[in-house]
Amino acid sequence: MPSTTTIESPYTPEQIKVWFRGLLTIAWADGHFDEEEKSVITSMTQEEFAPNLDFFDALEPIAPKDLAAVLGQQTEAAENFLRTAVMVALADGVYSTEEDQKLHSFCTALGLENQVLDSVRATLYDLTETAPVQPSDDEHGLEPLKPAREWLDQLEVKDPRLARFICKMVPSQCPFERDVTLFKKKIVHIPPMCKLNPLYDQLVGLRFRALSYLADDCAEDVTPYL
Image 1 (cartoon, helix red, strand yellow):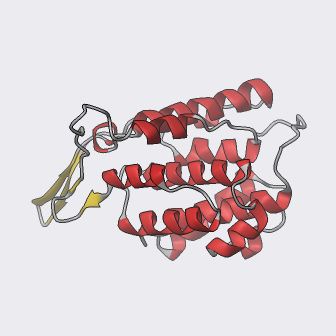
Image 2: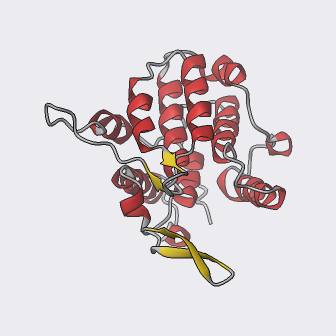
């Protein structure tokens, strides 16, 4: 159960409200969540992540302009939101075109540079190949995803509600590889997420920072997230 320790968040309740709406907009962007799953996520968010905030009864996807109206343009809150949104998009190991489009629309509305998102785009899932597009090194031998890795690693966890959300969204360990079968015939082989997602280490690092923040700064029991 969350601790009763009072932590002063740098974000207002209204900012947290649109922040969560933005993250769920990304999570539902590719249409892989049915109505029952959406209900479960909404309930989990309301009961576990922010039980004292009374706006989740109207929780629904948010338009980019409405997000920017609250978080502002070129602000620290806007950039940290975009970092968490990228993490949510990558959390299941499949970065889809729909998620990419939503992220770029948020990025534009928030007045942020999109060069990092352009490098993340190199991990887009190729449905025709049933595998992500693996970025290759450029002619100078530089790692094309290095800017994205460094940018994501700069995310500091400063709010217990967001920390709990991260701990739930990011798996505690790399999911096992598996085969998807239909009528006893293998349709596709899915490798472990740590191999599928070239930014997996950034997800793990963020989850660790969120756990440490809850345990050390908020004095919460993080056992349920382990």
